[in-house]
Length: 102
Image (tube, rainbow, N blue to C red; front, side):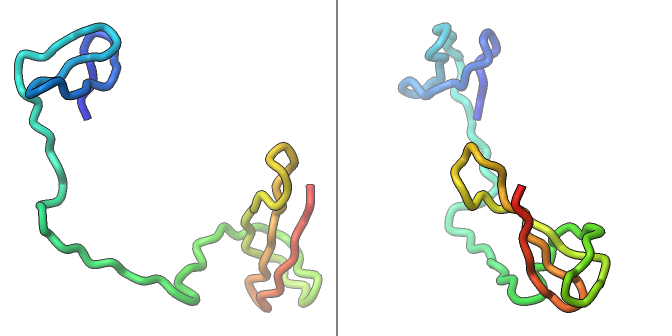
């Protein structure tokens, strides 16, 4: 993606050259677009499953079931957008899950 040197807007293609839709700047050269992948190149896709997905932060929250003092946490917007999100906890020892409303 190229930007206008005068106003900073994204340059758009006008025939074989690029120009700025905001200020009218036009480049005298063709802009070469670089890509990181070659056409037809295949990439491998890895699958993450089970215990490999535990990349959640750990906080000092006491589990009500086993008394462990560490838990994973994450937040989810369970109600309307103008209300606070719900915070979920999962014990690092017994995997008991609970939630906290704000």
